[in-house]
Image (tube, rainbow, N blue to C red; front, side, top):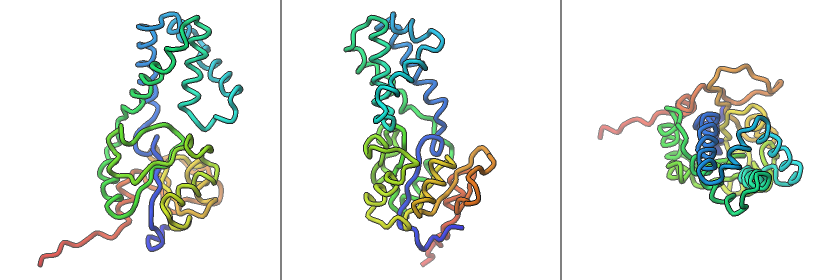
Length: 238
């Protein structure tokens, strides 16, 4: 159960917490494929072959094991590998990545996202905390956040405790005064519990808990259920 009196700030996950990530990436991949077809057709043809993109991704991950937390870096390196194998110019990698990255920001927000962020950010500092490379400014949600802590900036990804500790430092709060909100049982809830945070599990799909004996302080189906935990402010009639 949440102890609202102890909460001085909130960290919140992005992908699959504020919007569904699978359709976003699917669409961004298609936009990228269309760009490749128009500008580097040999690379586009290679990318369409079964198993090629997965093989290249695995190669890049093996080549750069110290960069697994940086999805943008891995994507760019994968594009460079693809272009090289296809005999296309490496100078196409950066513009290809920018096409993908711009499309990756075209998210479809869950219906409760904007209302909930407006509610929460009016009461407490809210910090984005993500392993991904979404840009809340480009998405149009920047006004609700005091900043973003991303894995690529910290050098580690959730569930590493260092990323949560870094977020608390940015917020200038002790770790037990920060509430973490996210959808992933292991990466968000269990990892945040390990560092002493209060936690909210955003379980939009009604999934069974698989985090062991410890539970989130609160489980919600959407973020408005989290907002409902705060006492309602009474209107002053004068």
